[in-house]
Length: 100
Image (cartoon, rainbow, N blue to C red):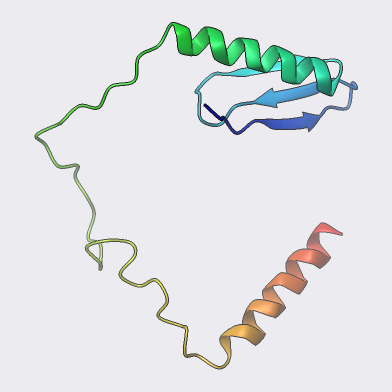
């Protein structure tokens, strides 16, 4: 099975590892190679002691006054807007300038 693993260089030189798909699966190691080795072992240990189940819950969650039944109802509503591309480019340029 494949898992997404996030490797982040830390200021102290260590590699911080997070596995987004497994809550609380984080660790640190001095090298990338050791980090990948350790996270593989950690994932294996967690999975060997875990069980994934799905439960039917007969209660619907409470929701505020949402204007759409599903969040995807609005998806793509700007596909014919001729100004969307220009506006999106401006947003991207602003983000690039803020990060650089």
